[in-house]
Length: 347
Ligand SMILES: *Cc1c(COP(=O)(O)O)cnc(C)c1O
Image (tube, rainbow, N blue to C red; front, side, top):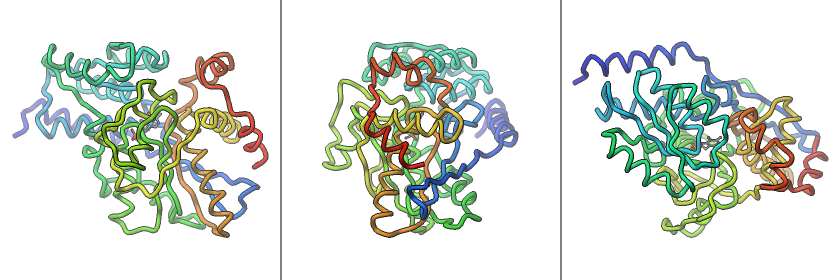
């Protein structure tokens, strides 16, 4: 049974949703691929700046439905930053304390945004420590550990309910090739890939799902050899995607193919796309673009035409001091200049 606070919490989230608009689907074309239409669903325009706005809403609704949180429950989350920003927003909406457990390398802009929404940041040395530290904190404070890496795939309604997949197909309706040949996504929790892949099967549409994995992530090797005990000590350098362990929300069975994308290509693609679109995109969007162009080549060689859809996961404004700073770039992720040259030849 719902108590009064829980009823009001659902009502507040519903009202917030009603006040929000759907995100845009942006199209672009390239001279090098005259028969292929490219689309990006721009998830940077959510109130909290990334696709994690959807996930945070779903996780709160799931936790409320399960009776896991009440009017005084502190909310704890392990995050690479974007999820914590969005959860801090919803925690504030419901008047709940929020603590994000993150690696100390997390972008300063994200930390500022979490604090802007009244959240606290608990920084640890290394990404691999965030899970255990979140459990420990939740125990100590009598709080609820949201655990996006476990619950992302099941908190989202994969059949429809205007999830990201349904929204893409609705927005594609009047395009020359309304059913995408491919959708491309980079995994953090794996939740978005799971939602898209399940929706595609359930609806019976002829779309394939390519998942693109950055350096220092275990998802690609797990997909190829099935070993779910794989770990990586370095940690991904592309914020938001790539994980040091096989996350429970990563569902390999819904994926048609995977591609390993070198970080130097992701950053080259991020910069190139930003000048093409006239607005800065985040690094994981660069990774997505590398996957799209890989498919465009394949389709062109096979004489195929059609559309390829992916996501702008977040905006580049969050990364002006890191990925967009040339000194930082040279020190951390040198750009692949051959790839950059090749990109410039496509326009
Ligand atoms: C979380 C995230 C992703 C990946 O989305 P998942 O649904 O968690 O797999 C990609 N890019 C950014 C910036 C993210 O924050």
